[in-house]
Image (cartoon, rainbow, N blue to C red; front, top):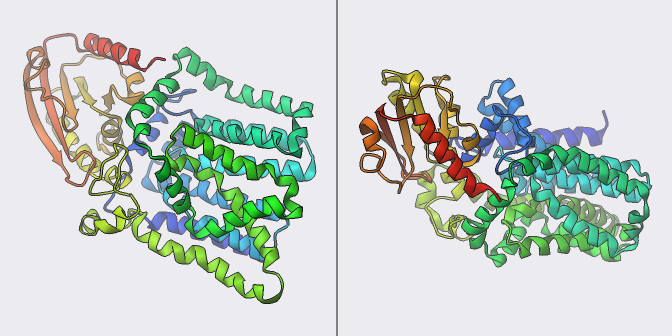
Length: 510
């Protein structure tokens, strides 16, 4: 085993160790993770908010035991794979050992550590962007058209993971046209590769068509409720923070792509960065959507700096360059990870306010960062519902209906009674509702601010309606969740469920 291979394995092992130690035991899984895990029980070619790739990984996680270890393993794996692809990119660009170590250090101590703590499509999204860029570099260097087909396959996988991949093409195609690499569009193999990519994503496109393109409805909802609060200046500021320790490397890459002769053939990457960022800014995208852009520029910058630092007094800058990402990561370590208990964060809000981490998607300031607040109180909720469910006389004829997907998914993940399945009219759960069983009782899980079932339309439909318990956690995103029991249905619950589901689905359709 070579020295380079040993060093690479060391970085990968360190990556896994960090990913498993950056989350305090005080936190549960995050809201979105529960939804993605439940998608693994309902395999399909599409979902209301995401393409199918994550559900395939969830199916594997269920097969492995569905433990937190495996839930956290796959985002860590995708993060380690991103580091590996950057390593291979540097080798393709003929970087030396210093370039490899610098690039790996920059990727390791970056926003990817935060991103890879959560089981969401974002980790594979960054890997997809990095790999497609790497494949294009291989094609430009070798001229071998087989790389176009590899690129099509990996782009398709990335698209089937997150539609965010469309922005890669929005930035890349015009960048190719602006440079001498526009000759790629004269190659018949390119169009065969594009056809292959379209064929691979076709099942998802057919699913979208058959379901009236719910992705468009989802994007409209995002635009109305979340993206409307996106500040473009904050978006740009976040880009700096994501790779703060690598900023000098990325800037070096942009300089090299313009003026370094060996990199002239890779100049489309210079224009692609700005064109892609411009597209994100135009659509007021969330800041983390752009994280996948930068790893390839770390590769370019590392190779360029390794050549600059080869001779003379500049050689003394090598350890300094490697130390910068680590040193600048230390203050970020204090605030960017759920490695401290909520009480500590509430006592020291100034650290988090300074970097805007307490500003949620609603545009308001809150006691904890949103992702952290979304990792609290779920297990308590599931155990409380378990307790209430077990005391009902007819649990097999009881429907558990939650206000949102976080509640439903958390109950399904943590419940000790595997016959108990929580449902919701929210997100993909609306497609998983069952109407083929007798329902006599209902457990309603209500988020803060919702109507009290003891005083609204449900009361006349059941023999009794009462609040059976509350889950209160002042640091959770939903600080107070109420659980109501509706006993002795006087109506056909299934018919009412169908009617409400159809009405809500009609709002989702484009």
